[in-house]
View: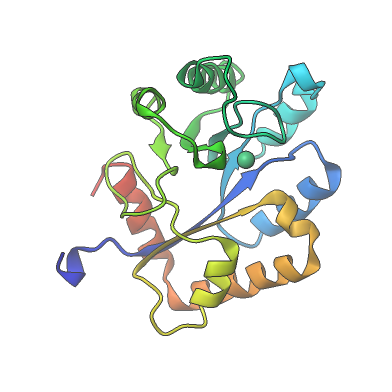
Length: 208
Ligand SMILES: [Zn+2]
């Protein structure tokens, strides 16, 4: 692929695993006021006693917002036997919409996906962040870097033209990881213009 046809830009997403945890939420809330971060949120799971009203109150402050599905439990992301994974994605996306939220992105918990999940994500019109390689394209915004890879990458002269790093909300509870993230975001802000980042996102939404 010729270099100039490779989509460029830096995107950072947060998997909000524990949006009901006050300290996780406080840390994330402070961060997103300083940096553009895609918020991919795990919906509340009433089977585990999670408070839907509190969740909605917080989620409604996130705009834009994405869906992060855990198939088994709040702490166990991958499907485990019972249940239809694609059906759960549809149910969660529609539940969000019924409550006035408009998810734009999707990322499968523990990077799980299958053909039916991918087809459902597409049918729901969500941009899929689950792939770990590749470039932004219609309906896809691959997640390429962990927080550690990002922190090392920003110090290297060979950071790829397209970078989509992710972290978890609970990473923000750890002072060392939080500092690494903030330093990286600052460096990315210097190295990448906001126009570049929107270029990658535009491409994933199929509007060039
Ligand atoms: Zn997760």
